[in-house]
Image (tube, rainbow, N blue to C red; front, side, top):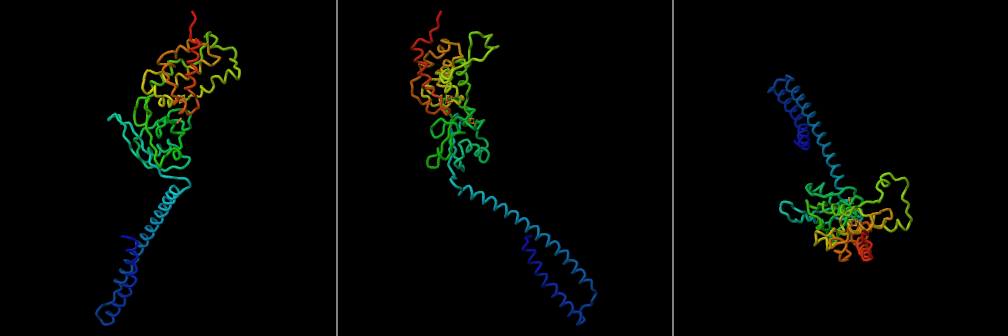
Length: 329
Ligand code: SF4
Ligand code: FES
């Protein structure tokens, strides 16, 4: 029974009971009924129990409705704040997900709220936690350091954690898809094995002629400011693989070791502490290396760390022209 039903019965009994007493008194006065008192006592007890139950029910239903009302108020005020908050919007986020079973990309569109601080990664994680937990996204640092959240956002290879949602959206729409130069694994996640093995091929690290001395250095390897500046911008690479994805050669020739690895050949070749010499440059002296580069420059355009792989590769070519890669007998 609802609280209102109890209230109606309660008020009805408030009228009915006195009427009953009046009727009983008349019947006793005219000798139709004999007064025993039992009926009154039972009626009064029944009424008391009934009123207690009724009041308890009315009170608890009122309490429940107050609670639910306050919950509704909280939710609706939150909704209002998100919908009408300063600079906040609801966007269509289309995610082209790689379906391993069907071996194709499937477009799924989700509605996501965002403000000026929301990144594409935030939007994807909100889809994952609130709408579709099966969405696969790789990320780690959420601050442009680890390089694991690379994907293509509105046609441009980007770090999802550094790409603002609202600024990148066009007509309240944004499209996200996995990078294509790396083998696809699931949804937005790609396989970096080949990318890392290319990096390994160029022997990333400082090599000294005297290995014993390198392992037990007795003093620091001093560098002048100029010596440091020669390689420093190229050492900022976080191995996100965006340059690889933007590169038209890497996309069409799987043997090309790619802009990231080549820029690191240059990085170590320019480091005055490295003594690998011509052997280092030789690692890039091939059609799969620096000579495969067609200088499209897309790698440098997308690099989130300002590394300039295109410039590094052209500088490697100049070094090779100058014969710096020749190994003397
Ligand atoms: S060079 Fe730039 S784009 Fe390429 S892997 Fe390194 S940080 Fe990423
Ligand atoms: S999550 Fe680390 S770079 Fe984006």
